[in-house]
Amino acid sequence: MFRGRGASLPCAGRMEPITCTSTSAVRAIGLLAAVAMSGCAAPGTSSAGVPARVEPRSTTAPDTGGLVAMVDGKAVDFAAIRAALVESAGATVLRDAIVDARLAARLAAGGVVVTAEAIEQERALLLGTLSPDADRAEELLREIRLRQGLGETRFRALLARNAGLRLLVARGVRIDDEGMTNAFDVLHGPKRTARIAVLASLADAERFAADRTTRSFADLAVERSLDESAARGGLLAPLARRDPSYPEPLRAAIFATTVGETSAPVLDGARYYLVEVLEERPADGTTPEEARAECARMLRLSRERLLMDALARELGSMDGVTVFDRAFDAVTTPRGAR
Image (cartoon, rainbow, N blue to C red):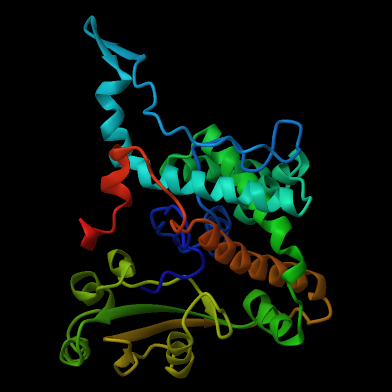
């Protein structure tokens, strides 16, 4: 529910949520998750960096032969594992292929070229958000890729897709005073650390509050909270008052509650939550003028990501897509239509 910055993929293909209380790491995961992952070639480009041709899809069944492995002298061919592979990752790979084809067409129509340099810039951007230390950044990236199952082919495709989407949305990004103020607050303003518990009803929230007289908020959150933060006792990463990664009602509750105290139950949609404020870290003393370039860069990246996510969702629509391979029925047919 309250995942914070970029904790899961909001468009075609999904990455599993990553539990992380490091703000820089969560931001980096958000950049990595900005678009769909792919098991295909880099979208819209050839190895020379020119718009690639999208070959028409064949309506005939693919060749399912081919030796994959030998197990105690017995062959395992692709046909034996194909259905399981489709079931496991078919929806993600197919949706990414759809995004790739439409992205290639959009890039070609605009005369936009995704170069090798643009792809490497995406990788550098990701590493820079993970850690200022180059070795540590590479280590963290390896951990993320391992956890997300991103091999070299899919990772390069992801970077290329990010690069293509970023080029297409770049002209739509606006840097305004309100955005700069918000960015400054996130980067250099005071921050609060808090725990959250999400409950199904007001009665549950009131029982939680009553039990706080004898038990810790963290223990109760582990047992009762419906939020994914429950595993860590409801602990959230430090957040600023203007941080758009978190819902406004949550930020308001955290900054309106006295440090060391627990809020009253707050209604959010159909559920209630309570927050316990642990501490407040003061602003770091940086002036807006000193941070102007840094804030502008952060604001641009943030707004680019929102536009990239929206464009990826548009390109990943199943409208106008005809799937010929029946093996994909189970992963592309809406649940209610089966």
